[in-house]
Length: 431
Image (cartoon, rainbow, N blue to C red; front, side, top):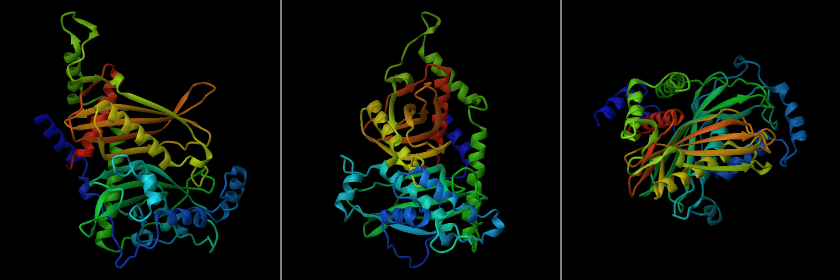
């Protein structure tokens, strides 16, 4: 336990507590007037525009016509305030029984994958609200393509009920030259008041009309100390993400303590009688990592596309989450509950028609928690080659029993174990 306390203290010195790096400002007397479905419809047809059916040639022609009104530099764009991008909408599960069927689980809860889809598109909507383009006349489609680059962190802090409306809200909290951070809250009524049940932070990037190059965004003006504090926390998040990428096990060796963890696995699993490096013995109440996988392959159809004719990132997140949940359930032999999602990188867009291969792996366990990793790869059916498009990290909690310990066999598995451990420590640092 002492080692765990030391590591937690070190992590807190490196990364600020997420309780200090979150927050949105709610405008006074703001009234919720739209559902999430209305927000999506307005974004799709009024803001982005283009053909409503799948026609890549017609879509490209319509988008090419918008290149002339794309700003060339931030100097052309007026500064925007955080309140300009604020919005709020309802997911009306309490009043719309047909909609409730799409969101409900067999356990009476809400399908987290559906909420991931809603959060993804709502985060994009907030950045479009932030944009004010002087070149764009009223009634014209936006020349911007706003796409998700990263899901930084999502914390599930309360039970989400399937028979009660969900309020989704947020605004842009940080802006660079061509990227922006959207912070979102999900809330439900508890004891007559709206209570936060989920908090999320997305990083999105602006691209040109055909998604071939970067575009610039309106700078973010800070009109109060509170807004300045929120903006600076966004800067801290950017620095933290860069520091974590530089410390990746793909770049640098494990720390001394991490090396000791892996050597301890070797000592516990080697056959001391045979004195052989090849003979391995699995400890009681444990599972080899190679036996804790679940895989799936889907063909990405046009109905799963976003408004930019790529596969919708929220759809990919839903598929990854549901596979991770199923794998964790099979592994632990009891129902898991999601408590944290982090570090979802969208490395490259997924084209319509792609074969998308998902590989779920339980990679770390501790106490009542399971860390599950999912990779998404596009498969080339002609060569069999694979190209990674996304990597997901999910932290689950078990409420009935502790899971068996996951044990790596190979060095590659050991690195995956240590990466999962780092994500787990980051997800539980403030708890």
